[in-house]
Image (cartoon, rainbow, N blue to C red; front, side, top):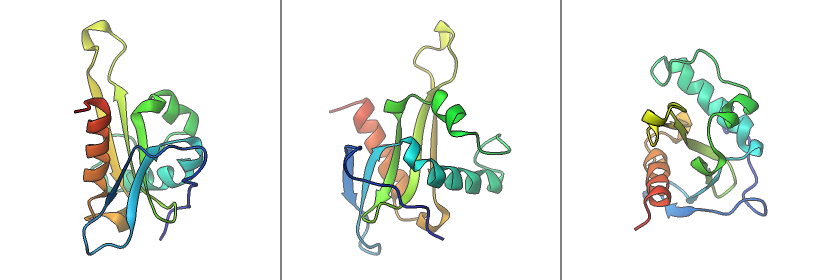
Length: 134
């Protein structure tokens, strides 16, 4: 099953692009996660929830709830050359209390059909480069 394609041109600026291992076709581009990606992100999130191992959540949130808890500059999606969302990563503060300043929760979810292709690793690499350049 392929996730709903999301546009990769115009509105979004790629923040990283890599070729995946030789046994996979095409390239993957990491772009900012926007509302247009939500149907595919929600599907991937639901698949993670269904495993019972990815989160304590029992159902995926609405876009508004998801976006409110994860700053826009700290959410990205990996899309293939056709614009299909393969996975997503988001960073969220764990608390607003000053004592927890800088402490975050990192979420990485990969579509089950993209598992084992390096998508999660790519998302984390791009996230790391973006947060700690150089």
